[in-house]
Image (tube, rainbow, N blue to C red):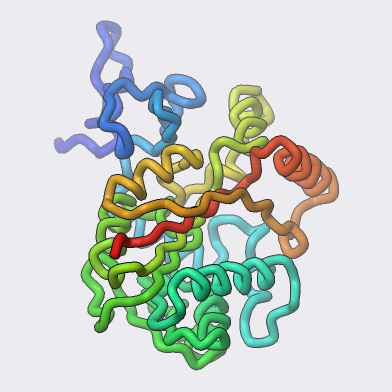
Length: 306
């Protein structure tokens, strides 16, 4: 009988019980010896450089199924309203203002041109980029998300894997907001971006920040019986990599891009469906993170040398 991926990722101890095998080499620094993050049964490991990652990775079929489930609101119930709010009748709230600020920075860095948004969400960023006189193109693996964005905003979206998508002329800017942590190989995604960008073009990457008050608290809760499930609000099933600012910068620079700006960002909780105690706790941690420079998200802007 063929062993399952989970079984084959472990060795047998003398007693016959499964023991965790050594984790695969770190994506960022190449080191071996990453240690389980939340005890011996944890699927998450942490390298000495600070990168946290899922080991072993799920199969491509499992990844695709999880992304489809996430689009239909089946992974984290709290996000359903947040996602659905940002179609054509979107509000003027911190999320929208953050997108506008991102587009404005990219316009200042590049002067405009073609912008490719990888992993389009609702299509809102494409719409705002068009308002700023970029020529926007989405690249999206979910046909449902692509169709909805076309319907709501009339934007052009290429359906398929960014690694092989035909995007035409070299873009001035590429955006990846909450994308690379979902991929099997973030370095390949970043290398593809570096190859596609025109000389002097800019890349924007945003991910959850593992060096934050939120994740530090989650790591404590994950080890407490009865409270460990709360950590799953951050360690969600379709995130496979958890970067710190340092590890994200190191990875982006390894593909030949020059980082010009690293900034923290605090998430807006106004449209998440949390209970009052959970919301109050999260807001307190987010506020503390902002004061301490340990914000919940990290944004990196990088340019391709001319």
